[in-house]
Amino acid sequence: MNVLSLFNGMNTGRQALENVGIKVDKYYSSEIKPYAIELTQHHFPDTIQVGDVTKWKDWDIEWSKIDLILSGSPCQDLSASGKRAGINGQKSSLFFIFVDILNHIKSLNANILFLQENVGSAAKLDVGIMSRALGVYPVRINSSLLTAHLRDRYYWSNIRTKETMFDLVTDIPQPTNKKILLKNIITSGEVDRDKSRCLIERYIGAIPKSHDAIQRHLKERVLFGSYTVVKEDNILRAFNKVEMCRLQGFPDNYCDMVSTLNAGSLLGDGWTLPVIEHIFKYIKL
Image 1 (tube, helix red, strand yellow):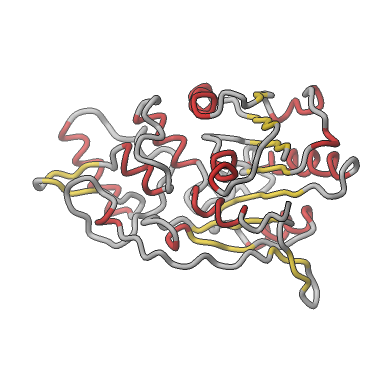
Image 2: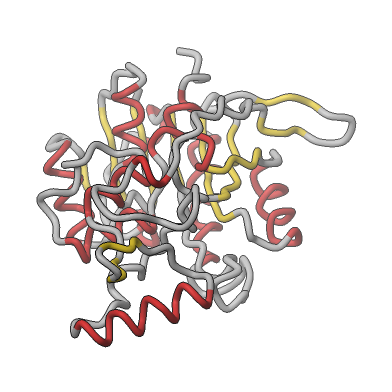
Protein backbone atom coordinates (compact mmCIF):
# COMPACT_ATOMS: atom_id res chain seq x y z
CA MET A 1 0.00 0.00 0.00
CA ASN A 2 0.90 3.64 -0.45
CA VAL A 3 -0.13 5.55 2.66
CA LEU A 4 -0.55 9.21 3.57
CA SER A 5 -0.66 9.93 7.30
CA LEU A 6 -1.79 13.39 8.42
CA PHE A 7 -1.02 14.62 11.95
CA ASN A 8 1.28 11.59 12.01
CA GLY A 9 2.54 11.97 15.59
CA MET A 10 4.55 8.93 16.65
CA ASN A 11 3.72 6.97 13.50
CA THR A 12 1.28 4.50 15.07
CA GLY A 13 -0.41 3.86 11.73
CA ARG A 14 2.80 2.61 10.13
CA GLN A 15 3.65 0.42 13.10
CA ALA A 16 0.14 -1.07 13.09
CA LEU A 17 0.35 -1.90 9.37
CA GLU A 18 3.71 -3.56 9.98
CA ASN A 19 2.31 -5.56 12.89
CA VAL A 20 -0.66 -6.94 10.93
CA GLY A 21 1.53 -7.88 7.96
CA ILE A 22 0.48 -5.23 5.42
CA LYS A 23 3.38 -4.23 3.20
CA VAL A 24 3.96 -0.50 2.77
CA ASP A 25 5.55 0.75 -0.44
CA LYS A 26 5.55 4.48 0.28
CA TYR A 27 4.55 6.11 3.55
CA TYR A 28 4.08 9.88 3.52
CA SER A 29 4.00 11.62 6.89
CA SER A 30 2.67 15.11 7.61
CA GLU A 31 4.05 16.20 10.99
CA ILE A 32 5.70 19.33 12.41
CA LYS A 33 6.92 18.30 15.90
CA PRO A 34 10.69 17.68 15.62
CA TYR A 35 10.73 14.90 18.26
CA ALA A 36 7.80 13.13 16.59
CA ILE A 37 9.69 13.17 13.29
CA GLU A 38 12.83 11.98 15.07
CA LEU A 39 11.02 8.98 16.59
CA THR A 40 9.34 8.13 13.29
CA GLN A 41 12.59 8.19 11.32
CA HIS A 42 14.31 6.13 14.01
CA HIS A 43 11.85 3.26 13.59
CA PHE A 44 11.05 3.71 9.89
CA PRO A 45 13.88 5.58 8.10
CA ASP A 46 12.12 5.25 4.73
CA THR A 47 9.22 7.48 5.86
CA ILE A 48 8.76 10.43 3.49
CA GLN A 49 8.21 13.61 5.49
CA VAL A 50 6.05 16.14 3.65
CA GLY A 51 5.62 18.83 6.32
CA ASP A 52 2.78 21.13 7.33
CA VAL A 53 -0.70 19.81 6.48
CA THR A 54 -1.93 23.28 5.55
CA LYS A 55 0.57 23.33 2.66
CA TRP A 56 -0.62 20.07 1.14
CA LYS A 57 -1.14 21.55 -2.32
CA ASP A 58 2.64 21.99 -2.55
CA TRP A 59 3.47 18.37 -1.69
CA ASP A 60 5.23 16.21 -4.28
CA ILE A 61 2.97 13.15 -4.06
CA GLU A 62 1.53 10.78 -6.65
CA TRP A 63 -1.99 11.43 -5.37
CA SER A 64 -3.71 8.88 -7.59
CA LYS A 65 -1.56 6.09 -6.13
CA ILE A 66 -2.45 6.69 -2.48
CA ASP A 67 -4.35 3.64 -1.15
CA LEU A 68 -4.92 4.69 2.47
CA ILE A 69 -5.12 8.06 4.20
CA LEU A 70 -4.92 8.37 7.99
CA SER A 71 -5.94 11.32 10.13
CA GLY A 72 -5.94 11.98 13.85
CA SER A 73 -6.89 15.64 13.55
CA PRO A 74 -6.47 17.77 16.71
CA CYS A 75 -8.98 17.16 19.48
CA GLN A 76 -8.27 20.15 21.74
CA ASP A 77 -11.43 22.06 20.75
CA LEU A 78 -13.60 18.93 20.92
CA SER A 79 -12.44 17.27 24.13
CA ALA A 80 -14.29 17.63 27.44
CA SER A 81 -10.90 18.58 28.94
CA GLY A 82 -10.52 21.46 26.46
CA LYS A 83 -12.34 24.75 25.94
CA ARG A 84 -15.13 23.25 23.82
CA ALA A 85 -14.71 25.63 20.89
CA GLY A 86 -15.99 22.78 18.71
CA ILE A 87 -15.03 21.52 15.27
CA ASN A 88 -14.67 25.09 14.03
CA GLY A 89 -12.13 25.91 16.74
CA GLN A 90 -8.66 27.01 15.70
CA LYS A 91 -7.00 23.59 16.09
CA SER A 92 -9.82 21.09 15.55
CA SER A 93 -10.92 22.83 12.35
CA LEU A 94 -7.84 21.26 10.74
CA PHE A 95 -10.18 18.30 10.29
CA PHE A 96 -11.52 20.09 7.21
CA ILE A 97 -8.02 20.08 5.68
CA PHE A 98 -8.16 16.30 5.94
CA VAL A 99 -11.56 16.36 4.21
CA ASP A 100 -10.16 18.51 1.39
CA ILE A 101 -7.22 16.13 0.90
CA LEU A 102 -9.48 13.08 1.03
CA ASN A 103 -11.83 14.52 -1.56
CA HIS A 104 -8.89 15.42 -3.80
CA ILE A 105 -7.64 11.84 -3.68
CA LYS A 106 -11.17 10.47 -4.21
CA SER A 107 -11.38 12.45 -7.45
CA LEU A 108 -8.35 10.48 -8.67
CA ASN A 109 -8.87 7.17 -6.87
CA ALA A 110 -12.44 6.28 -5.92
CA ASN A 111 -11.19 3.26 -3.93
CA ILE A 112 -9.18 5.26 -1.40
CA LEU A 113 -9.48 3.92 2.16
CA PHE A 114 -9.46 6.27 5.13
CA LEU A 115 -9.34 6.31 8.91
CA GLN A 116 -10.13 9.37 10.99
CA GLU A 117 -9.98 9.39 14.81
CA ASN A 118 -11.14 11.81 17.48
CA VAL A 119 -12.23 11.96 21.11
CA GLY A 120 -15.25 10.16 22.48
CA SER A 121 -16.19 13.24 24.51
CA ALA A 122 -16.82 15.30 21.36
CA ALA A 123 -20.27 16.92 21.28
CA LYS A 124 -22.92 15.10 19.24
CA LEU A 125 -23.26 18.19 17.03
CA ASP A 126 -19.57 18.03 16.11
CA VAL A 127 -19.67 14.25 15.57
CA GLY A 128 -22.60 14.81 13.20
CA ILE A 129 -20.77 17.52 11.26
CA MET A 130 -17.70 15.31 10.87
CA SER A 131 -19.78 12.28 9.89
CA ARG A 132 -21.68 14.14 7.19
CA ALA A 133 -18.42 15.56 5.83
CA LEU A 134 -16.99 12.04 5.54
CA GLY A 135 -20.18 10.30 4.43
CA VAL A 136 -19.98 7.72 7.19
CA TYR A 137 -20.77 7.57 10.91
CA PRO A 138 -18.10 6.33 13.35
CA VAL A 139 -17.61 3.34 15.60
CA ARG A 140 -16.75 4.09 19.23
CA ILE A 141 -13.99 1.97 20.79
CA ASN A 142 -12.43 2.32 24.22
CA SER A 143 -8.75 1.38 24.46
CA SER A 144 -9.52 -0.21 27.85
CA LEU A 145 -10.60 -3.34 25.97
CA LEU A 146 -7.03 -3.89 24.79
CA THR A 147 -4.87 -2.03 27.33
CA ALA A 148 -4.96 -0.85 30.96
CA HIS A 149 -6.02 2.56 29.69
CA LEU A 150 -9.41 4.29 29.58
CA ARG A 151 -9.32 6.03 26.20
CA ASP A 152 -12.72 6.49 24.57
CA ARG A 153 -12.43 7.34 20.87
CA TYR A 154 -14.51 7.67 17.70
CA TYR A 155 -13.16 6.05 14.53
CA TRP A 156 -14.57 6.95 11.11
CA SER A 157 -13.56 4.58 8.32
CA ASN A 158 -14.65 3.04 5.03
CA ILE A 159 -12.40 0.01 5.62
CA ARG A 160 -15.57 -1.87 6.54
CA THR A 161 -19.05 -0.30 6.49
CA LYS A 162 -22.71 -1.25 6.62
CA GLU A 163 -25.92 0.45 5.58
CA THR A 164 -28.53 1.23 8.21
CA MET A 165 -32.02 2.51 7.52
CA PHE A 166 -30.75 6.07 7.17
CA ASP A 167 -26.94 6.12 7.19
CA LEU A 168 -23.68 4.46 6.26
CA VAL A 169 -21.77 3.48 9.41
CA THR A 170 -18.29 2.21 10.22
CA ASP A 171 -18.68 -1.53 10.77
CA ILE A 172 -15.61 -2.43 12.81
CA PRO A 173 -16.59 -4.93 15.53
CA GLN A 174 -15.63 -4.26 19.14
CA PRO A 175 -12.36 -6.00 20.00
CA THR A 176 -12.38 -8.86 22.49
CA ASN A 177 -11.70 -7.61 26.01
CA LYS A 178 -8.18 -8.67 27.06
CA LYS A 179 -8.89 -7.63 30.68
CA ILE A 180 -5.48 -6.04 31.17
CA LEU A 181 -5.24 -4.40 34.60
CA LEU A 182 -3.21 -1.33 35.52
CA LYS A 183 -1.52 -3.12 38.44
CA ASN A 184 -0.09 -5.62 35.95
CA ILE A 185 1.64 -3.05 33.72
CA ILE A 186 3.30 -0.75 36.28
CA THR A 187 6.99 -1.41 36.91
CA SER A 188 6.74 -0.89 40.68
CA GLY A 189 4.46 0.53 43.35
CA GLU A 190 0.68 0.31 43.63
CA VAL A 191 -2.40 1.91 42.09
CA ASP A 192 -5.93 2.55 43.32
CA ARG A 193 -7.84 1.54 40.18
CA ASP A 194 -8.06 -1.18 37.55
CA LYS A 195 -7.63 1.15 34.56
CA SER A 196 -5.69 4.35 34.10
CA ARG A 197 -7.51 7.56 33.34
CA CYS A 198 -6.86 8.79 29.82
CA LEU A 199 -3.21 9.72 29.31
CA ILE A 200 -3.12 13.32 28.10
CA GLU A 201 -0.41 15.15 26.19
CA ARG A 202 0.44 17.50 29.07
CA TYR A 203 0.62 14.71 31.67
CA ILE A 204 4.40 14.87 32.12
CA GLY A 205 5.02 18.45 31.02
CA ALA A 206 2.74 19.94 33.68
CA ILE A 207 4.58 18.30 36.60
CA PRO A 208 6.80 20.69 38.65
CA LYS A 209 10.41 19.80 39.41
CA SER A 210 10.76 20.05 43.20
CA HIS A 211 9.66 17.09 45.36
CA ASP A 212 7.14 19.01 47.47
CA ALA A 213 5.68 20.73 44.42
CA ILE A 214 5.37 17.39 42.63
CA GLN A 215 3.47 15.85 45.54
CA ARG A 216 1.10 18.84 45.80
CA HIS A 217 0.53 18.84 42.06
CA LEU A 218 -0.19 15.11 41.85
CA LYS A 219 -2.54 15.18 44.84
CA GLU A 220 -4.45 18.07 43.27
CA ARG A 221 -4.66 16.31 39.92
CA VAL A 222 -5.90 13.10 41.53
CA LEU A 223 -8.58 15.03 43.46
CA PHE A 224 -9.53 16.86 40.27
CA GLY A 225 -9.81 13.49 38.54
CA SER A 226 -7.52 14.22 35.60
CA TYR A 227 -4.48 12.07 36.45
CA THR A 228 -3.79 8.52 37.52
CA VAL A 229 -0.68 8.20 39.66
CA VAL A 230 1.41 5.43 41.19
CA LYS A 231 2.05 5.22 44.93
CA GLU A 232 5.47 3.94 45.88
CA ASP A 233 6.80 3.96 49.48
CA ASN A 234 4.02 6.42 50.38
CA ILE A 235 5.21 8.81 47.67
CA LEU A 236 3.18 9.65 44.59
CA ARG A 237 4.77 9.53 41.16
CA ALA A 238 3.70 9.94 37.57
CA PHE A 239 3.90 7.08 35.09
CA ASN A 240 7.39 6.42 33.80
CA LYS A 241 8.24 6.04 30.13
CA VAL A 242 7.86 2.26 30.08
CA GLU A 243 4.43 2.44 31.72
CA MET A 244 3.22 5.11 29.29
CA CYS A 245 4.31 2.91 26.37
CA ARG A 246 2.41 -0.03 27.84
CA LEU A 247 -0.73 2.08 28.33
CA GLN A 248 -0.77 2.74 24.58
CA GLY A 249 0.18 -0.83 23.67
CA PHE A 250 3.76 -0.16 22.54
CA PRO A 251 6.88 -2.19 23.40
CA ASP A 252 8.65 -1.01 26.56
CA ASN A 253 11.62 0.43 24.68
CA TYR A 254 9.72 2.08 21.84
CA CYS A 255 10.37 5.65 23.03
CA ASP A 256 13.84 5.12 24.46
CA MET A 257 15.44 7.59 22.08
CA VAL A 258 13.26 10.56 23.14
CA SER A 259 12.98 12.23 26.53
CA THR A 260 10.30 11.28 29.06
CA LEU A 261 8.71 14.69 28.47
CA ASN A 262 8.51 14.15 24.72
CA ALA A 263 7.41 10.53 25.11
CA GLY A 264 4.55 11.73 27.31
CA SER A 265 3.57 14.29 24.70
CA LEU A 266 3.58 11.76 21.85
CA LEU A 267 1.90 8.91 23.72
CA GLY A 268 -0.66 11.20 25.35
CA ASP A 269 -1.58 12.72 22.00
CA GLY A 270 -1.35 9.50 20.00
CA TRP A 271 -3.33 6.43 18.97
CA THR A 272 -3.53 3.17 20.91
CA LEU A 273 -1.51 0.72 18.84
CA PRO A 274 -3.57 -2.48 19.36
CA VAL A 275 -6.81 -0.62 18.54
CA ILE A 276 -5.39 0.49 15.19
CA GLU A 277 -4.09 -3.03 14.56
CA HIS A 278 -7.62 -4.32 15.25
CA ILE A 279 -9.10 -1.92 12.68
CA PHE A 280 -6.44 -2.67 10.05
CA LYS A 281 -7.16 -6.41 10.27
CA TYR A 282 -10.33 -5.66 8.30
CA ILE A 283 -8.46 -4.18 5.32
CA LYS A 284 -9.01 -6.35 2.26
CA LEU A 285 -6.04 -6.30 -0.09
